[in-house]
Image 1 (cartoon, rainbow, N blue to C red):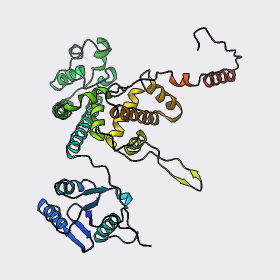
Image 2: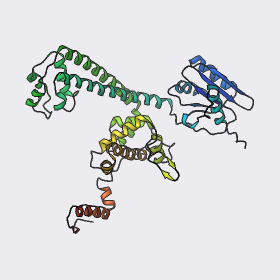
Image 3: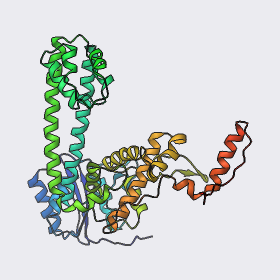
Image 4: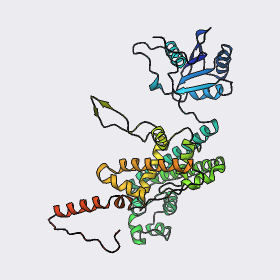
Length: 411
């Protein structure tokens, strides 16, 4: 059976670090050529595609190697430049060369069997890159804090046991003094901020240790690294704020969601944007972000699966927000606690992050909308009789006889 030709003038690109293999399929051209990946080579590729009358270009999303190709081809008048998930275009096993890959991609494009990944506009791609890099620097700072803690343990200094943040105001004052040679526990304790919970005597005991020249050197270098990271993070945060100046209203409304702070809102906008017209429903956004369960069914039996793959940055931010929302007396807190007891805190946080993403969709799709909380007792009020029966069974299992009578305040 002949397949219908959907794209008459198409090209498939097999993109690698140093070489690009391109196959053009048109009514008059069926040719494969290889190009380098330097800018002059990419310009030659684009000119050749144009000379062949190509209107649609497709390539695999191979690491970051597709980015320079897309950045350049976007400047040319092609109707579509498609980046496709490699899992969706695997060729036949046992037939694997770069030429065959490019021909396979071109053939799939010709019959309309390819589905392009969502590639945001270049300004959003650049914003996303900055936001992700800031997250990497924050993670590097946390790693450096762990290294400092190891040095303190080696010096018998238990600072991390009595204050919550070793790199907070009190921690940095004490660490700087230790690095400069101060060893008197009482003098170090006097540097503490008055607002910390630990008493002066507790601090003196925790700061009594054996700090040598080696530990002082390590602390001095590590504190310099932390200061450098703080400056870089502050600079990136300032740049992000500048680029998001036109989205202050959306950022403010997103922060009405429990567990979502300014930086989380910035990550959300960088990852999904503010124009959600490409997602017909909240379910489509949840699936795209990788918060929907995978599918694995055989012989009529559904097997347990992990959630789908999506944006790692968005998943990490929403999961962290899920943990934060779990500490609040809100609807999202109730969602978290319903699952944490029987599925674990991590799965509960992921599920809560999914609810946060649904709220994000509603807020960004509706001008002026803010988060409206259903209340921490939403699930109890939704089916009060089921709650009563469950609690009665639990008490009877402990050997009690229970009689339930409504009060005047009960609905």
